[in-house]
Image 1: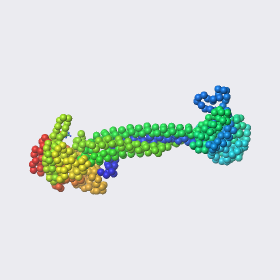
Image 2: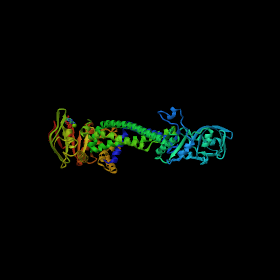
Image 3: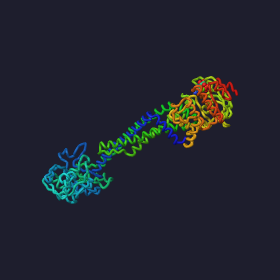
Image 4: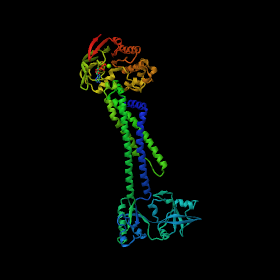
Length: 400
Length: 223
Ligand SMILES: Nc1ncnc2c1ncn2[C@@H]1O[C@H](COP(=O)(O)OP(=O)(O)O)[C@@H](O)[C@H]1O
Ligand SMILES: [Mg+2]
């Protein structure tokens, strides 16, 4: 019997046992769809988190004042000392470290922005020209704080603010009032949307000196440091900690964190999670496989006399085995294909419902889902097929 | 040429032993028309199954067309069945899902004949057995006589040298049974060896050689 005839004959058999075939195909399809949808969710969550972190900058090290330790707290606390401020001089000192590519000191506060009769409270970042490349920000108009311009009263507006205050789109070159001082708009940030719960479209950025004056503080909120490379992150971290400890009279009173460590952990956890749910979904496929096996065993029992007849007209055991094998192949192929479509449809629905979540099923999961369906189906057919092939033709014909 | 020498077939049911064939020896020449008669349980079907290579004897030798086929492998037996033997059963044994034409086509498919040639051979068979207008019908839509005609067409589509019929008229009324017998005899006239197991004395008498069986042994062999 040629492979093509085997496929055709088994297809017509599968098609004629409609209800039974539909049930098996449905079980298989649901298993495959589960793999696709669940991995799409897991992978979407992973991509979302990674995307959020990456938008903050790469090879980023964050220095903050005070020591964040679970045990003991600030070592000097017992002596009645408060943690030392993190100052602009500290930032300047760190910027000379060889492992550091660039850094941006940061102050954050809230102030009143006014222009042309409009007035609103805005979040104000005080920083330097390096903030733009470190935070991966982009401008839509004008220029950022110019290098060495810490002392000129410039302001960069987030895209929403610029539109609110200057609906005609001509923000650059206009004067605005922030707190009690006047600033010249030098540029407008490109639309960036929300990242990590912080909307950079509604902020204003001014030079660090003005920010410290505005908020009446000498202390920095953060120093954002970009290491020279991924490999330089750990050495840079150690060097920064060491340098600041020296400058702070031997007290280690700053916290140095890297987002890569956090990111890696998230990445790993979410990958493991995705694999886990894929595995669980695959188990449902194995259950479908057991269903296939049972249904096929029943089919062999029901079709005993037909198998005997096939042998009587000259079918070999291999012919019979291949016929049942091909039936399982058709069923799992249909199940896999429908499940694949169903899964991608489900993932699409999720993306519609949660536009922020990039719930795209990873290619490996789609392939693995369909392959698992095929393999399970074929494995499940091995026992029934060989049982059919081994039937004694005389007994089979007599229906025993 | 069918040559059975001291064929024995024993069935064991628990500790009971049934000698369905006991030391049976028989020669049937090509083109003969033989009827096998005897009481129920005398071993007629078993003898036919051994001749048709569906069953393996426990003892003795079987020579078919000059070749010893006693110890053939499962695959070789399937090939010999396909090429040399045609079976017709009392209960027709048509595949219920397949149409009359598809049932007839089965052996051609198993043999690996190309689809275009299959079609012309099935068409010819449909014509020969007066089934042209029943080609697309499923077995459940056919009368008993039509079903047996489909079964005979299927058994002969690969032009076997021997046609083995086990009570082919057992499920048919007398008139239809006679028609089916006439059809089988026509195939015999065309050169096929015809061996018919039957209960019907009248039908059995039409054969040119009459074999009587009892308790697994041949008790009569008359021409
Ligand atoms: N598969 C089997 N298992 C046990 N006994 C069997 C089997 N097939 C046939 N027999 C026994 O062998 C004897 C001959 O059976 P069979 O050839 O079918 O007789 P007939 O066709 O003449 O009625 C009977 O006693 C029957 O019960
Ligand atoms: Mg019988």
